[in-house]
Length: 203
Image 1: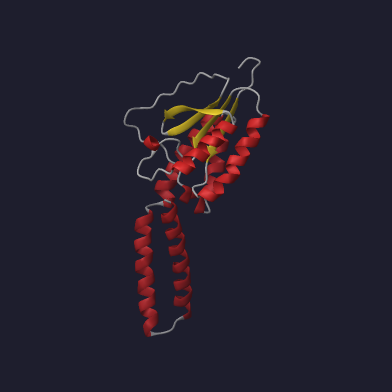
Image 2: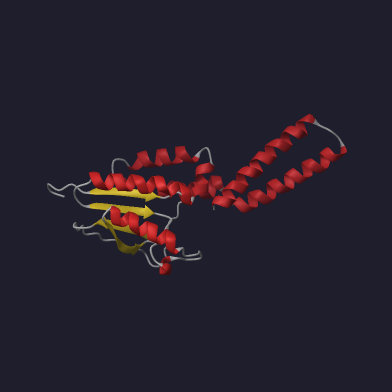
């Protein structure tokens, strides 16, 4: 903006609480290096107020820890837009205009996608399509991730039921006679079912 540099950080906090300490440390270190407007946006997997909790349990200790991190980084909450937390460094002002279509379902990144071996390449290709515009990159990733979810990742619960059925059929057959190929198939199905169960847990 003219002669003034502005900084933007995109955050997706790990869903596992113990893994977030690394992120808090990174943000604190970055805050000390930035001089100018700084916007931090994304999903922190934490809340400041009980009113922000939807379908979960509010934990005061975690909220207080989150508030302390924001204070250390000199960040304050700009409010809730598109169900994302937007934070701007104190002492600086940056005009932001956002428009959300009424009734539009917000995009939600699913951690479970990361368990699929093809997803990293999906993000890489989509990001390059939008480069060097970061906003276009994010929109491309959103579009391709949504398509990937429908075409490749599929319905996790349907896959689980089908794998359980196939595994049960194989095990019933193995009770009657031993077959090396069926033993291998049993192991493969077990692994696939374990992968689906992990994805289900993450979802």
